[in-house]
Length: 516
Image (cartoon, rainbow, N blue to C red; front, side, top):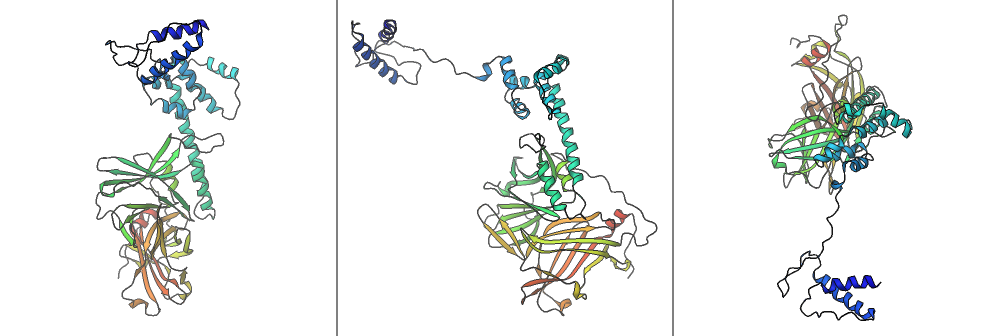
């Protein structure tokens, strides 16, 4: 006790007094009052000098320094052996990310012993390894004979090979379009692979802004992806837009995808936004937004008052979607093998008959029309203007006229507003060949346009509309009548026009326009 009080007193005596503070009295036999006065004076001096390691000059022009706390502890000050011990408890993703901190951490994160343990545990994920067994395996391997990072590269290489094998199994699990469980299989494949879709916007300065999907809706033959954000990049400065499929590389013990930063990006499509006057096909508008279609598969909604992005929607057909989303690279899309035609020298009308058409008209959860037409064909005399004309619904065949449920609208939604655009909707078209292989598949927005001269529809009473869609493979033309009494449209004419050159290339034929 006496020794402790003497140390406190000595510290107080050595302290230069502030103006207005008197020096403490000499030590008295009674230690109680003296100790209280010393504690009070010392606490006042400490408060005045709090936060400073150097005192201000006193009356005697003396500069007094007090003892500062020791330097804060940093993990970098630990020896390498201790750091390696800590790193050995990290998961592979954390260990990879740790190598980006600094040069020392990068060198330590390449340690072969640590990665060899991770490699063994990955190869035997379903087996409980004991410590002595693991040490035996380590002793049998000469880790010092290989370069640093060898087992890290080996682990990642086998991880990617395992991913490729899993992706191949997922793609094969999705059955052809003739299967009624196509939608269920696609949902399962997307969930198992952990697949999501992102948008990458590039501006004039090559600055990239990435937006992840906010909503996903599965249909019979396509899926609809929606991207919404409070902070969209400025539309006037954008030059490119990229659509990527993103999949995580790692999976857990139950083969479920793990969300992490070790991901694989696959470029699906790239769009040019440099020409703002002609960057997409105009679809329609309401009091808030304008719709534009970017081929293939994207819809951009722009605010009418200011040309900025309101939302982006993707309509992705199931045909070859998984290959495009999983097998490409970050900078280039997946290149499919060239199609080899199957020749037929027996059938003189090979490639002109046996077609099937599945058409789906919808918007969001609403379905306006969903039907399948089989046994479609084209006569040789109908090959004109470089196209095969295939009639699906004829004007004169009233039994085939098909109703469209209710009024058709395109439903849109942002994070703060929602609305609908009249006479616009999404349309999925799947054309199968005679062998039931997909020949022409697309998913795109379309608009019903009012016909100004109903000269060909004089037998029908009601407002007439038509819709058209075309790409390099073919064209879809439909004519509709609005029945006011029942408040629904009727499709009274539906025709497919298939490009003759594409048909010849696919089937190995040599059809040409018929003479007039």
